[in-house]
Image (cartoon, rainbow, N blue to C red):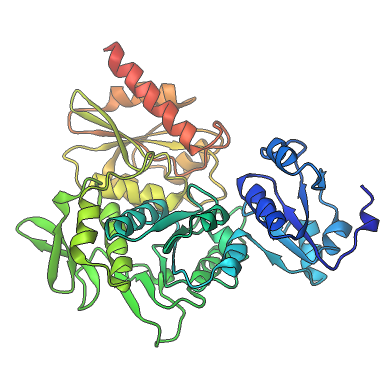
Amino acid sequence: MNTEMITSDQLRVVIGLGKTGYSCARFLVEQGHRVMVVDSRQSPPYLPQLQQDFPELPIKLGVFDSNLLKQASELIVSPGIALTEPAIADAIAAGVPVVGDIELFARALEDTPVIAITGSNGKSTVTTLVGEMAAVAGIKVAVGGNIGRPVLELLTEKADLYVLELSSFQLETTYSLKPAVACILNISPDHMDRYADLSAYHKAKQRIFRGAQSVVFNRQDALTQPLVPSSVPQVSFGLNEPDLKHFGCRQSNNTVQLSYGLDEWLDSQQLLIKGSHNQANVLAALAIGHQLHWSKPSMLTAIKQFKGLPHRCEWVAEHNQVTFINDTKATNVGAAKASIEGLGEQLTGKIILLAGGDGKGADFSELKPAIAKYVKCLLTFGCDGERLAAEVAGAAEQQSVTGLSEAILQAVNYAKPGDLVLLAPACASFDMFTNFEQRGEVFKQIVMRFIDAQ
């Protein structure tokens, strides 16, 4: 293709041909825009589908062409691609606007309210739970974004409410979203291979509050404090005792009561999802629903029947009084720490922790206190397994293993009745697996094979 011949006034260039990029290209074509798709890979995953559905659509594969991108009237960048990519940065410097799929979605909205949820950990659980709460309340709801279906596909459902999980990458390119409720669950270091520092990551997350009509935040995490005018309605959640008109935990009759101010709403023992971190997730969901004036009975009905999501503190099996938990979705230090602490404080025994993979530049030393308190043995694997072990050295007994099969075999040797074998890697999976889901499935398969062989 001769890029010199492309006129610039109405060309929209979609960068990245994964699930999100395909959805953007499809949406823009259906809206009548002139579109081109580029991808640095020679065989991006959605190339065959795009060619089949839109055979006339121009596609350019290989190294990004800076001159081409500068000719665009707008770049639509997939969340997996950094805005610091040289050709993209050059286009931005030349004044080309850059947006993402959430911005396209926001522009297409009319008056339908949106709940927007982000955080380093727990956002898929909370997003799904809020969607189920809305359904029980009789609201026609569509759930998506960084979870499940691409957000632009939700527009076809004509829902009365959208519940969106948003990543920091998506928020970087979003300007027009005005959520009915915006929530940051927590912020801990993640994607430090993409952000210069925690401050840059925090700044991206805080974008969710722009234009929000009300906000929910974690009062035990200062980084979630909303940078919004005091006139915007705010409600907090936390695992400590709440002030009036906020959500938290109260001790009563030797159990934890999820409470709104002085009112005890739900005994934590009635939750199907376990761990204090999941109590925080439920409190966040309650706070979101409360901001929209959903009825307490309908919210509690949904919560009591919520079984959680696959690969998030998922119970796999119990064998010889040893429990096996799959938390492969703990792909960063904060998530792994929450998993260790949330499960460890409820155990009679100790945790045998399986961790490692691609650390994305994280500081593993933040895991050391939790490991020292709750972990009997740390079994490490993957490309950053040795670094992880070194940064938490002395917190617990350690052993380096080649992969999940050896890790599970050694974990069983260490485990005693009352202990828990936990896969909470604190790392991405891409050094050894296609994605975190495959890592979790392999873990479950090996555990069950081991148990069946006994």
